[in-house]
Length: 562
Image 1 (tube, helix red, strand yellow):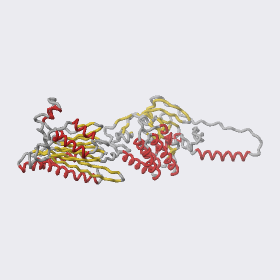
Image 2 (tube, one colour; image 1 turned 45 degrees about the vertical axis):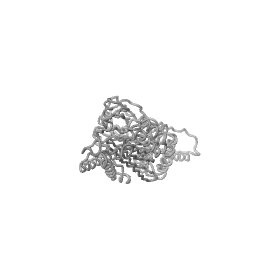
Image 3 (cartoon, helix red, strand yellow; image 1 turned 180 degrees about the vertical axis):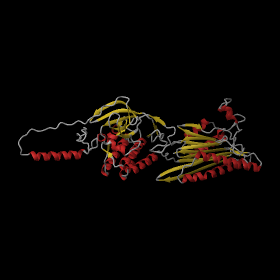
Image 4 (spheres, rainbow, N blue to C red; image 1 turned 90 degrees about the vertical axis):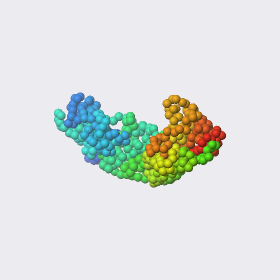
């Protein structure tokens, strides 16, 4: 359809001229009315020679040479792309680099003198400097540059809108009007395939925010969604300026919302993520405010990235062994759950303490250690129950140090050398945090293999690290019971922390050295893989340790992620 104002050849179904924004439907109706009126005036008259007016081509400015500077020397012409309908289109480059926002979810380019991102507020100190290629439109009249001129005057800024950088007039040779547009290449939305549901929601949120800004300005889309949005090679969506209409009403945006929902459903179905179709459909059908839609889509994305629901099976036991008169080991197993919006989450605390110092000393140290350690974690557990997420690494470290302080103080008061090991596993969300002092151990069974997570604080471990003995030799070394770190022996203690991802089917094992000194890792792995009942597995390991001699107290704590 030819525009009556600028002569631009638009698509037949276009409502507005892509070049100047003229209402084509209204012009068509006016033209039809005029034709009818002329027909009435000439009806019944004799035949006469028709007069056909020659179309007047709009005057085109003389193209600027390569290297010419315009816009106050901000743009350097690289080449002329085309000249038509009174407009020259150039490929140009900005002479002053811009600051790219370091926020990976923003990436907005800001002026070189900006200290903070105009879109998200991120600090731009040290931001990457980029020189942007632009498409420069040139005409004798700003009317020829609509709707871009109007868009530039409204200062539309959003990471997903390829809005004009600026509109200006100047006279390098004669008075000319200019529009600077971003140079964007890529794939139309209708031909893009996302990798996963998370990507779909990120794209949906960005575009919803862009639609929200257009709607606030009374703007709309004049092209189908499939061609109005272009995706760069970095999978970044951009709403093209040629697709923006200078007028839009609520009915228009309702139709866009319906089409947008259909596109998101097609994407999700194509990648086999049908479980997210209903939640996305609910967002777009229950809300008409695009900014609220963007917020709801962000919440869906966050829900998608919540840790998987973990349920645990637990078992624990301790035994005096065959040679000791008293059991100086202590253990703690503590599991709690919280549930909100039909989502149940588990927190579990497993602790083993192997006391030392003899009767009325070792058992006192291990008991006091567990009491202080667990009590110190109670405020953080309370925060978790209130749906806050504490800094668990810091909390575990502080709890171990407090336990060491109080056990050391008790040893000084009792005038003995009591102390204890401490190995703990905090299971929260989809991870396990281990804390260790001494030579009690923490293991995990993952993918059918037993792996020691903690590292012994012992003399033989130092010898192994130095390459002087092998791990097998360490099991029978005469000095294997000498430890280099323990709770309560000194005012200060070094704590080892380890973090391991937790997946369904994984096993967590804590034990005192009464097990590992008697039963090797190969046999422990065999029992854990062959016995599904954790209580039976615990008793089997204790039995094997006793059958091998039972030289020390034996404590075993097991947890399985279901």
